[in-house]
Image (cartoon, rainbow, N blue to C red):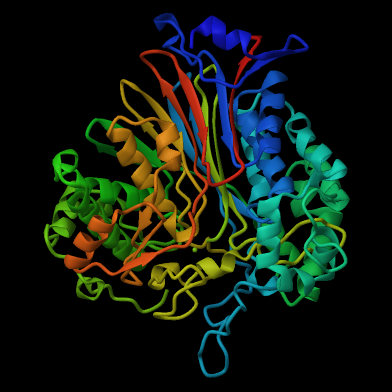
Length: 570
């Protein structure tokens, strides 16, 4: 489609900007900067919130605040102001990259045995359901930080779409119903949560409206007072009172002490692609670089499908083995980032890979003394200045802890489950770990969230996805697909497979492997576990520097919305 045809297909709104349903192919003179802005998020209302803020003169960072807050309202099963996340930012004018760490922190009263019974066994559900599962939220502080340090608009403007959505409500869709049904019993158990997210104790019907006036008031307090509107004052007191009444450990000191941390992203290279990804306490960047380093020594593009898949699985296995033993919050433990992301470590780890034989995970011998979902959310943004954001946000399990402190509208996370509760015992996503991820007061739990940039002379990719323990491997498969020359529509839709060291099985979506490939993989010793349905909800953007084309894409497994917009330059 020509530029003019693309422009004519848009709809002018008050002369401020033009929303386009297509990608834009620009002349070479546009290659220095994107000709349009792009947003891909998992919810159309959130994408629209970001577009509205860009239309008001905001940059990608203002739009990221708007999208994050809107998702907290309309996708309560995936994220929320009671949760946290990682915001990977790139500022184009000086090439500055940073990861804003808004991960939750363990309360000061947290301790290693808090989820164990008197016999030292893990109490089922205690780190998932109820207020004791809730860590101290980081999203409110992150939104204030990103807005004030990197945005161009007042925080009030960026939060305005989310406040309106909370006041006016949003309509229940099929995904909301499925998630609410999955957590129905836990939502019923908390009166405030049931009043908001259920109807007379039952899962609401498609089309019913979810109104969150208390959450609107919380967002208004944040818009007016910044951090203090959430972590101090009357709202903080209501949060602590509600958490403690429900059996949790929060104190006013926990909230007052929360701080955002800016971290240097993890970087690597794969066949000319420069990778910038999330740093610890995310395991994503380290594991991605480790896997890509191992695979760089193999001619993947010349191999048959089964052999290529076998090698990718073996790289996954080894990177997740390292995740289990070494990774945690770098503010509390020594994470050997340089070693784990080195080519020397990749060669050492990959030396045991055999082309015709799977490596049993038990032979890799991680020294596990102690050790993430069905949901989370991700969005990708690029503005016309070339600023970009990849952000993955979560409250962990769908609807988090299923607890709302009365009068706050804040749905609590259950991120404490991302810590290791006991040696050798997997968490709700089947992941195990070592002492590096043990519970400690004020510590951030290890995460799989992997917002990522991939750059070359040809273009820039922005990608990430929800999916718990499978997040990292989804991003890996997307990067490998990019390396094969495919675009974002392919990255977000290709069938997926996953191995995470333990359990020693290969999970795969319908259509990921042909019958012959399955037979070949099994002959090499892989145990296969077919899944009944797909997983993940990748949101991606690619800016082709050579043509100027900006292409956003939203995973067909979800209801996301990927759009570009042409905005008046101020």
